[in-house]
Length: 89
Picture 1: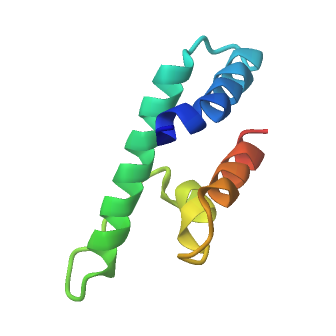
Picture 2: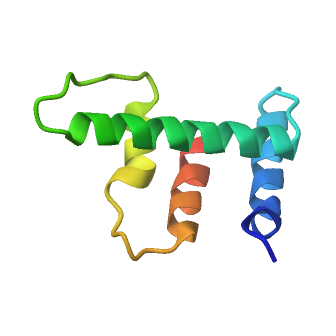
């Protein structure tokens, strides 16, 4: 089973929450957007962590850092998903 298959249920829940708030998005659109947000967050975090680099800012950085920034490296994906779901509610 691939990661996208395992997480399909989560992305469908995100799409449902979006619909409840008046936004029509497929679970595939939600998955792609969340993957892009995570990628952007990681790139900015890496850039800002380099010594002597120009710090970058991003309007979603604080929210993404609340989800992904402070969890131990050995923690499973579920805690990040739970945090994201909490922010959506």
